[in-house]
Amino acid sequence: MADHASRRLDQEIERDGPRAIYLQVAERLSADIRQRLVPGDRLPPESELSARFAVNRHTLRHAIDLLEVQGVLERRRGLGTYVLDPPVSYPLHAQARFSDNITAAGRTGTGRLLAATCEPAPAEVAAALKLRGGNTVWRLTTLREIEEAPVSIIDHWLPLAPFPSLAAEYRGGSLHALLAARFGIKPLRRSTAVSAALPLAAVARQLRMSPGHPVLRLRTLNVDAATGSPFEYAVSCIRADRLELVIDHDEPAHA
Amino acid sequence: MADHASRRLDQEIERDGPRAIYLQVAERLSADIRQRLVPGDRLPPESELSARFAVNRHTLRHAIDLLEVQGVLERRRGLGTYVLDPPVSYPLHAQARFSDNITAAGRTGTGRLLAATCEPAPAEVAAALKLRGGNTVWRLTTLREIEEAPVSIIDHWLPLAPFPSLAAEYRGGSLHALLAARFGIKPLRRSTAVSAALPLAAVARQLRMSPGHPVLRLRTLNVDAATGSPFEYAVSCIRADRLELVIDHDEPAHA
DNA sequence: TAGTGGTCTAGACCACCTC
DNA sequence: AGGTGGTCTAGACCACTAC
Image 1 (cartoon, rainbow over the protein chains, first blue to last red):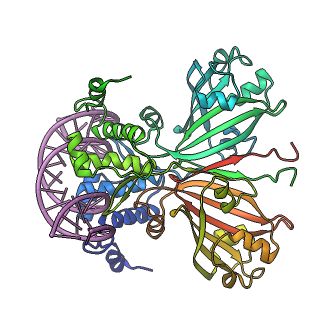
Image 2: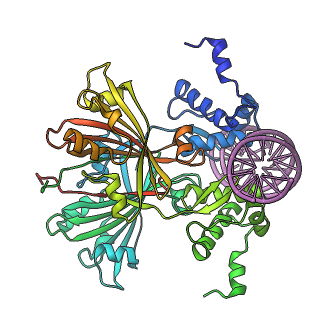
Image 3: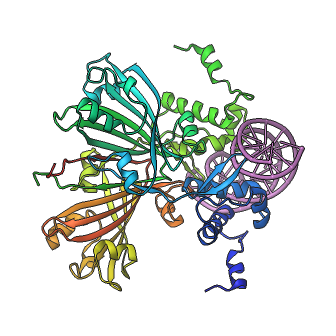
């Protein structure tokens, strides 16, 4: 119920208080964004904001750093700082499929192939796929976007033998849909490990993230429902500010 | 296979290259830590490191910021900067229980009660627990540690009626074990939402994190296996640098 | 060219911990 | 008291985008 005058007082920054200035600025910015701005809006430039708060530009940048890591803002060099959409829910159950998830949320999702190569399987991949040492595997790198905004970049590792023509056939869209239609696979997510990680510089660039900001890192093992044998090991880097994972736990059959 | 001379060359920092100095410093520090240090070791002070790399202390700090967010290092004001343990795996299946998970990993885990109050249920809690409006619920705040290091802080929300004496009986340890022993509940994790978030200042302090660093935020709904009705809604803030979530997907019964 | 964010340096002072 | 990390300021220059 703050009137004009008292709200201004609330907004005063305490320079000798125990709370760091950049934290106070971050809170005020956060409140201002919630109250006055909508996703897509551009923030005033750093020079203007630092003048408005009467702090140094570095201090203001420190405050914006927090909101950027939090997924509230996105900086675009040369352009400005923009308010982001809230994260999209991403159900992570055994049959989860990216395209279906996004469509269900009423958004437009795309999957694009960035690279397809044959490489010797790294130890982690060989172990997960239960390969003998020295095996060569497919490595497909895909980029996924929601409404033009990149949300994840995924390395898919698949054994060569069952999918000899994979690179020739897959161009984009749902990889699992192709595997189902063309190779008769019934994909089933077996296990997922979630951690926070710093993306490689190249990955960060493709996700249009500032360097140094963490992503959710998912390591997923997919098996064929028919045979139970693993057919894909995937390492995903997900912008945690754009996607929220949702896990629905099914009670195991034996319980 | 780098000998002394060539390794030194590898380590040179390119001041006019396209890669930012702080990123190069972060990579060199990261490699040095992997090769020469073990968890618990202390890094040289910032003044010494900035001199060694011939960069400004602010630039060095920027590099350390990255490793801190990544969970490689932990800064302790007045003490120094220390190498952290790698994250502990935390299985997130329907029957997952913190204490069992940690014990299984060969670590010592503790749970401590920070606060127990009765509060009106926030909308999110009331909806999850399927309460009528205006209901008062238990709010238990617990802190969990592994080997003396705080890893998560959890707000547990429970309805009052089934657990009239809860606050009097629970002091620490496994909350779910108490609910099972004392109230006959068979806890079952129903759904979990995972997102990245910035912790409140108070939470960050209790987790001994630097302000501005993100945590994994889990919102969990637990039901009683016997009746299927929800008995607990929990909001966890987890140090993503200390715990890694692992999800084993059980095939649903109908598949 | 003008405006935006990104980086680096420099120096000062503070808060916290140990002794 | 001395050493550590934490914060703030100041000014400079660069990289990218749009026009």
